[in-house]
Length: 110
Length: 115
Image (cartoon, each protein chain N blue to C red):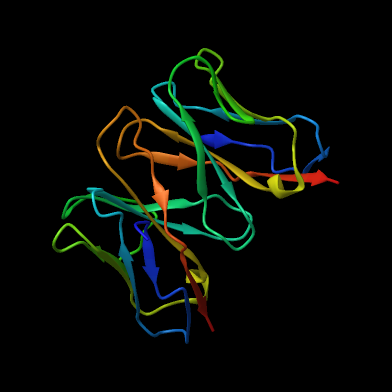
């Protein structure tokens, strides 16, 4: 079992719709959870992090964490073509150990 | 620009040659990470520094790879006797130990091609 699992996609959504990206992790001791966006050929850029159960909102983005189910998700409201990218979930069990998933490719169709 | 910088951005080398990459972290960050990323994969952890101390190194990292951070500021990653399988994007990230989450900020990466 991979430590951090994401569906590779592509996930296609129409412009203006809500995109829902999911991530599961295996280490119950994980403490911090991050979402990064990565455009093709570029490095990852941080979207947001979450460390408490529940929802965290930042503009059009909402991260959701459920530690009991070992599940973290990212919702993108009012999806735009510029949101088309690969979204990486990363999980940290402490300051040394950070594990990334393989990413989900999102395509927003105009 | 106070972000993470990496040099060079691209490196083409022949198999068997040595290469060295440099990373300059965000100035107030005391933690520095190196990752390798290949197409279709997420970043793979290579090694981690807190100040000048190398605190963790991936078991996947062969002896051909070495990293330093001599003064706790910039870091170098050297690959000796490169192989075609070393072709990848090498990413550097930095973070600080303030706050509850070790939020890492990535540099633009160095794309290595081994012929």
